[in-house]
Length: 406
Image (cartoon, rainbow, N blue to C red; front, side, top):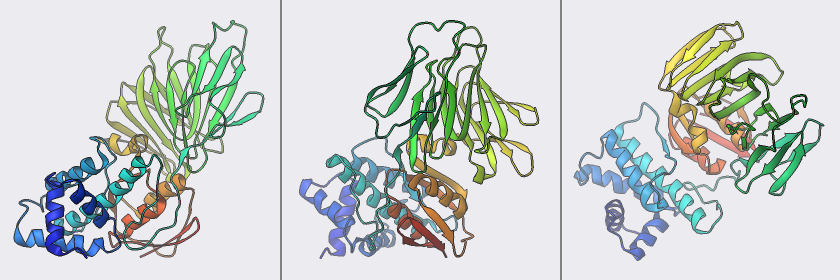
């Protein structure tokens, strides 16, 4: 049984990088144990009371504590952040919760990489259901109607059609390569890449541009771009890195819903941007990271965006709004994490529903908002436990069915 004095020593030594190998193993075993939560909170409470860690209640200090824990355990300078704190919380509670949850997730992350595979560990006292996160899953429908299931297809050449070779790479990426210059009278062949719930997939288009599809998304594109424009059509959410082309051949993304209703067109020459057009979100969001884009709405109104800007097109009110500083939140999924900023529980659960292939039922709806980042690589049980620890919400899980209560 670890004493509070010993716990203080281990925690302070860990943050100061002063533990030897044996002590580090003792620390990791403690924070991942079934009885660690209460003692860890008491340990940090004692530090507050004794003022042993100056400025611990400062917001910037919270981030320092977190990154220390993250970098030491995961052994990397760039790992997805994890911070869930209700806005009404006092700084003291936020710091305690932040450190507790950070250590829990990082221990999982370190263990999974050490063994070369993901392992499920307990988040808190109760073992959560093993609902694994999404991964590289998609289907490719060729022009002739044949369907290739990419997550089970072998690496290498998948098809050759119209002078174009389609290959699956070892990193789970789809590559289109034009073999020679297509004859002017040869029509391009159209195909559709689609991801299911719990899936994502990256494709290198015939012009070298890349598109990363989030869950429940599609992109329809030709086998080669031979006209004055490079045209593709998307649904769901897609992140683009578009190559510049000589001859002023603009890249145009037509945004549709799953019923085929046209929402907007995004025109670029060379840029990075994200399109989110899930029907149950009630709006289309076009977010520009670099370069320049011009968005043409369904009402034929044109809006120019600058880097860092996001355009929201409301389905219900038929309005447009340009917002600043939304780029980090918009592309968090591309970097491997969820990012919430004053988000209600339904928005949070819609993202979890798509990524973990779960169904959600609401017995009651919390009014509090959520803010923070959570790695998409952890299993659903861990994410739900993190949200529960805010004290704002409770979940009852039956298989892949999740009931939300307060």
